[in-house]
Amino acid sequence: MTQGEPESVADAAKPTAREAREAWAAEAYSILIGVAQTYHAVITYKELGEKIQSRTGIRTKALLQNWITPVLGRVVREAHRRGDPPLTALVVHTGDGKVGTGYEEVLTVAGKPPVEGEMEREHHAAEARLACYRRFCRSLPPDGGTPALAPRLQATVERRRQRVEKPPQVCKRCFVQLPSTGVCDSCAAA
Image (cartoon, rainbow, N blue to C red; front, top):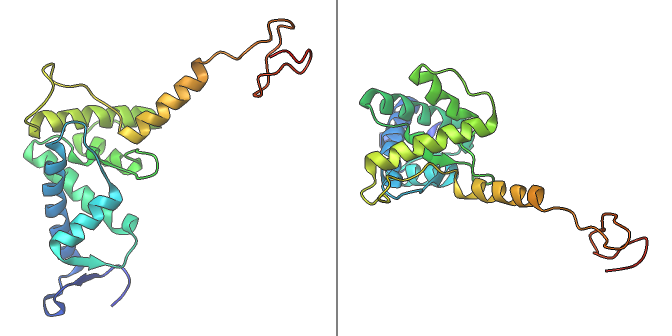
C-alpha cells in the first residue's frame, strides 16, 4: 500500500481512493450539518478529519492536509448543488481559527471573485457561517444572529485591538513615555 491510500477496517473490502473520498465527503457533509445546528459553532480540520475516518471506518496514513482539501472541495460543490450555504466555512485551523486559503473554492464554485485579503476572507466565512446557522440551527437569537469570526480568531483580534487602543503611559513629571516597568528612566517617578 502506498502512502495516501485509504486503509479500511475490513481489508477485504478496501475502497479505492475515489470511493474513500466520496465516503469521506458524504460523512463530512453530515458532520458539518451537525456543527451548523449549534449557533456560532465551528470545528477544526483535525477534529473533522478524525470524525470522518472514525465514522466511515476508512483510514489513511496520509497527512490531513493532503486528503482533506479534495474532500472539502466535494462538500463545497455538493452544498452549491443542493442550494445549501457553504458548510466548509465552519471548518477552521486549530492554531489560529482561520478558514484558510482552501476557502477560496467556495467563491470559485459560486462564481464570485476571490477576496483581496486574509481578513476579508475570514469575514466572508463569518457571513457564510451565519447562513449555515440560519439554515440548520433551531435556536437562533431573536434578531436572527450575527456573523462572527471563529472564537480563537476573535480572541486574537480582540487582543490586538486592546494593544492598539491602549495609550502609552506617560511620566507626569517628564512627559516621556514610561517603559514597561512603569518607572520613569529620567526621574525614577512611578
